[in-house]
Image (cartoon, rainbow, N blue to C red; front, top):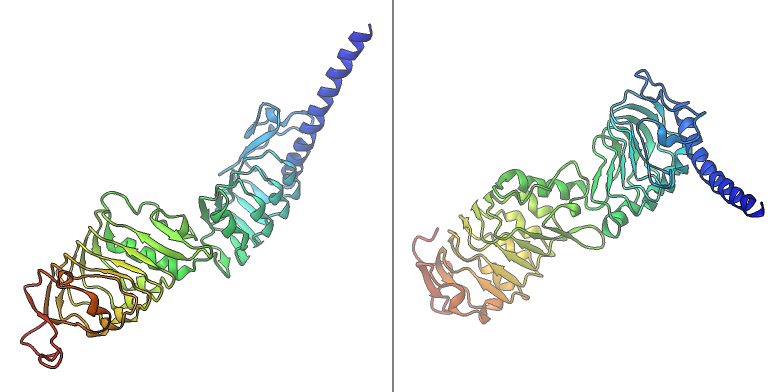
Length: 376
């Protein structure tokens, strides 16, 4: 008799735990339902007299009867989100996009530490983005675009990108005053390049301008401040032109665009890349002259422009690039003489070969640099 009582007690205790767990989540969801207008009857099955919300439509639970998904996208719902949603501690997907959800995003959403996807886009949400969302270390997809959100983007979002799992973030089409580093100008600069080139291999497919942070794009590397430091697009079969907007990438250290089919001139704005260490544009079809503005790149160590169709003189100003270690302008159509002073004094003729109109080294005291036939 005692053993039967013990079994009953254990069963009742276990049932009580599940019931309490389910009731708290059911109560939270019912609190939300009571604040919503539901003209399409989407929430009709959300019956508070049923202990387990796992039987409700648009709700998914795990094996322990805890809510893991709420799928209410494009449901015609009207009304606010409620703080009680923060009770759903095992929730992984909160899909409430394309409704008429109003009011602010409750700070309690930051308690949903198992959340993977938060999709609240295409609603009428207002107020600030809660800084507590930076607590969502498991978050991979954050889409808040097309609302009426104001204020700035919490700095914690940068940490989710750099050290967390966040892969997609879209906060476009709001009234936000700031952006996560990198700035809008950085994103726009990269997307200007995206628009200017053809990409038959889909190398730039991830370069989505609606994503605030280009550090999530493939072939882009950022520093700890989330500023772009590398573009690695060598041998990408890209065709088209370089764009002046690239000069806005003030932290860029490596511009690797070798072995593509880039055409047209080198923008003089590349001379604004004061942090640049390596400029690799070799094996393309670039034309025009080498911009003298490249002489502003005081940190430049590697300058490889070989195997293009560049013309004109080698700018004498480049001799003041004191950190330059590697120079290759071979296999072009450069003309005149090449400088031999300053940093150029350590380069051999191998750096200049196969330029049919190039007359050889500058002979100081005998051949003046700016003299010598038709050199354009």
